[in-house]
Length: 118
Image (cartoon, rainbow, N blue to C red; front, side, top):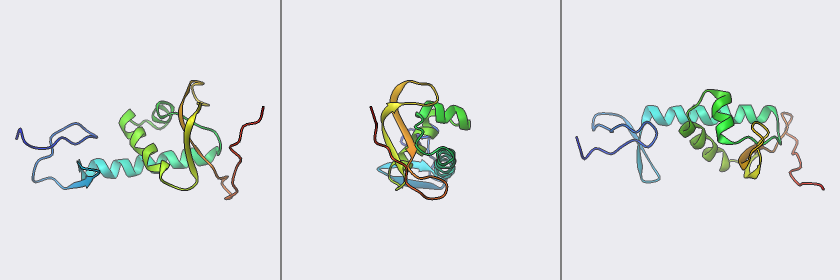
């Protein structure tokens, strides 16, 4: 129907009979939301393999075979978690200066320094 909300992830109408999640005032297909949880987990695992190395959402999407929307939503979830940082810096993937996200802990749990020298 024309009054059905649009899922912000897949951009299709949300029919009344479909399981949904309400998040931040938006109606999201439950299947789309579960996919985002997987995207956030995949991004976290990738970033933890190289703590301190910031990657932009475009490079994360390319490396993990995600859509731009999935990568952006996955990164947004990581920003709220301890052990990750988002800031404006050079992406180690493409070299562009843009918003990047990085893991702040080594695989053993040690904290890395994010202060710049020089």
